[in-house]
Length: 472
Image (cartoon, rainbow, N blue to C red; front, top):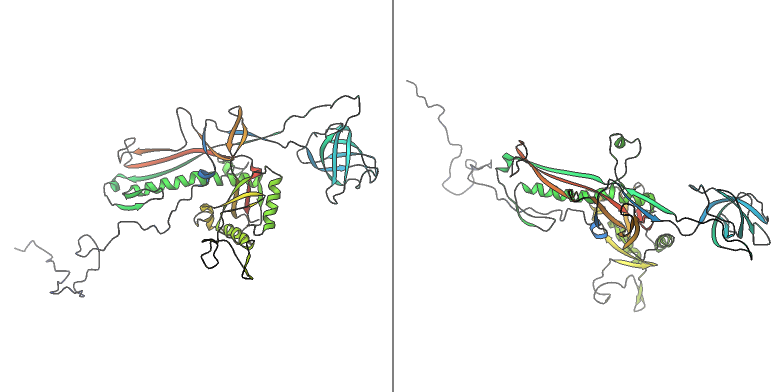
């Protein structure tokens, strides 16, 4: 009878009498059955340092609840009246003239009989002073010049006109008509931001620990929850970057057609209603003087924080360094700033945290603009970097606005986030677990799903006080 035992096994490895690696006893495949196992590090190596980029809005803004699909507020208009596209129907030397106002958006002028005007040629700068004698229509007014020589510029010359006062004869009636305050109404709508992490029940049953030091300061061991934790960190970053980058869905766009509405992020608002430096980075004092001159014409906020990428940070440092020369022993030195009482032989601190030029400017590195996986990875070559953002100047402090929902004036930071919330539902930062694993018992799905949700928008108040630095 034949034996039932088949396939007589042979030894795959031949042991050696000495502890020496031979061709016949060397293990080349590493698995749990092998005698020799690889050395492993259970602690993660943090080769990228702190990977999160959120912190900007926490530094400059605040969060407050809202229970509406839309946030509305009113911002003050200009107190004084000025028109920049006015043309006269009279010739040079005329004692009187009728002007037509063609400024964009002006359908009814706020000029009244008896008011005195400054009228200047936009090109040559020559000017007249005049008094309004009639207002024939909604966009025209007639003046009589104070100067003997009459009108100083040619017919149909584009001029700028502003009101500086009024004059009335003795025994006459008062001013005819009155002016209403001009408010600009702005609004924004919150968007819903979501994310999710899922792990199936089988993987949860096989434990493998990794020792970590996380970006939020926690240390210890994580199992499958390491990926959940990074999902949470990523979601928190998106809560901020969505407020920075969001744009409204344009009419007839693909997003609008699909039913999405978008939102007005900080960059979008400042690009459209704020001040834009289109030269990439201001590198000279005259560049900053032009920015200061613009701020004089806007809100003139005393203190401002400039959030910069590395290139703009270095350009500011280099500019300030060239302004700080001095002489030592009859020899011109390149810098007198630094550590150790400015000793020329000791270490120099080549960085600046701020400077004053009409206003106070405090410089702060913005990680979002430097991170290679975010805006730091975009083109920054001046010749081809149209639209690349290098920094953002944010006014410090708060401002008063009329809250359309509350129906009263309120003090608000220039930048702040409004999130949807009520007594029954708070959507500032929601997280919940679904599935049938990991303690959840909400469905027959053999997994644990960690869900994240927020509904929010950012309010950029007084965008005319912000400056966006970009190329193009």
